[in-house]
Length: 406
Image (cartoon, rainbow, N blue to C red; front, side):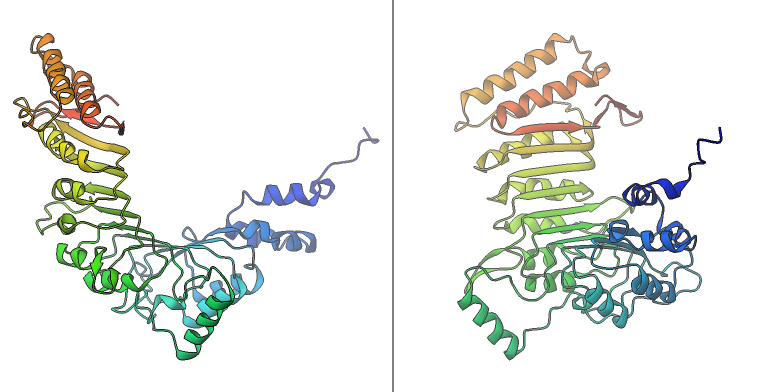
């Protein structure tokens, strides 16, 4: 036994040790760096600091943030997750302008930032965030009135940008470079903030989840449309998500009503919760729509059929998804098609009706049969569209629960 030396971590190559350390949390990494000089050097390897999640670190302070930034964070950082002190007993803010400037300098490749329960009212603008940022996600945060405002370029910046445009074929837009903005339960987000986003030159994806203060008028004012000087509003936007799912008994008009004026260039639309019923009928007015997702809602089968009929006028519509949807079976057969509708759809509706009759009125006990009939009918209406049903259910009776079958 003496000829076999005791094996410890010192015999492992450094790349293996780094892989082992990658399973530790940030707090455990900092503690591991106190073991010895070699471990301290390994802990500072930038491969371990590509994704930094500080949301589980209790008692986070500005002093700890400075220590992490000065000793560990660097050019390897890509994704940073932070929890603020908005719900803390101590309260206060810890994201200072000085720290954000230092973060921009030391972490020039950071592309994604997630802030949870952060009080951002002390920051005058999001332009203080790292300019390399592509994705910004805010959950339960408080914002200042002008947080999303973009300062107009100075004359020197305009001269520099014009010179770059002359010298190169493709010049990146100046100003805020965020491409994806995700807002989840941000109560201070209003129509004024939405209007400020129209000045962003790269914003292509916008997710508004439980933003109760956004109104239909605010959405209409920001919708992409033809103006006097060309396209106006959020005309670079390709994906829009709107959902109200957490607040019960919410009676205010939904913001998705603003889709009635259309939206040029919008290719993907996702509606959830209370935003589905008012927004679903206006999806047919989005001429460039390619994909529609409906989730976390209750839909009447007749309502689905009627709204999907109008989607046939969209030339590029390719995908329709139902996610966590509760379907209510129709009590009467859908209205017959008009004189201008094709024979193929009429035959499809007759086939579904015949299949309903063939069950001898026992469809109430067969929720899977109801979803099959609906799928077949929609497939006839939208032959070039891919239909997806995930985790859907059928409500057999208003007094009974739903029977899950997908």
